Length: 319
Image (tube, rainbow, N blue to C red; front, side, top):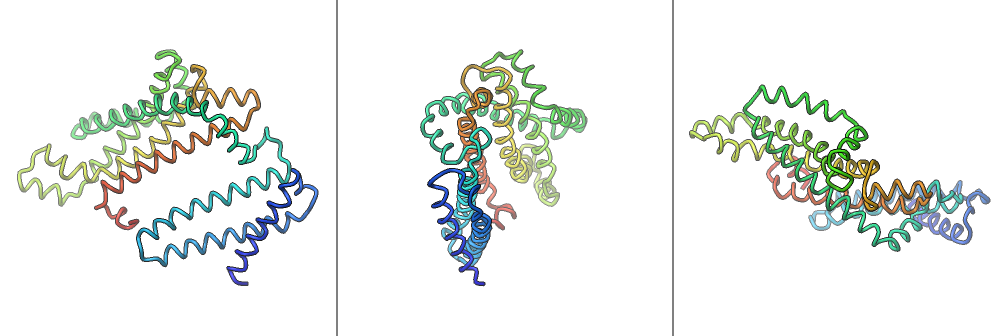
């Protein structure tokens, strides 16, 4: 059977499912037609994604390739959302267990002002401040101890210990030290992001090519020149790995820290409060804001990495 026929059948199954579930929730529970429709949708979606991927590999234009590469995850996400919507409405899943994407979208739009205030409290204050301080201090300390083996042997085990401490153990202490506002959450973020940046920067500084180091030494290069022209360029991929990792860790840490005390605003406060009220659509809308913030942060850092490490083999292979 042709792939295009399977894609067409998947599209027909999708339209049919939307039609039969639009009238009344629970249609799938009463009609066994979903046993054929859902597999057809999955098969059609699979071959549609496969065809889209093959199209991207056959193109020669870089803008067209980038467009297809962006379209693939967008289409994949759309298929997941549609399937989620159909299952929730088709089987009449209680909203307290799993709200439909359409319900979450409506809540996101109607409660946009509240969500924006939570975002400003959690991300613009706690996450951003803690991420900048934690990554900046980890980078600076790595530069200072790069030529000090005893400090490295003393700090790195501490870093491993700190990385194994759960957030739920650190957050209450930071709240007692810095109060209930965003400063205590920023302190948690600093602790979570400091050691990943320190470890990755040190690994990057030690990843310099000996040939380049010896060449600069031959030309009587000093410590500052060695660091600037050889070690830091070699360390950039490691540094950006830490920045991207910390962008997600920081958001998770700040949200969890807000469970242990915060003003009446913030993503963590909103999630814990709305769960207690069984208002799950607001909980999922807050999760959506967090996911968007984390994804955009990661994407911007990835774009900056491509700009600054265009010479690296991994960047050239992907570009």
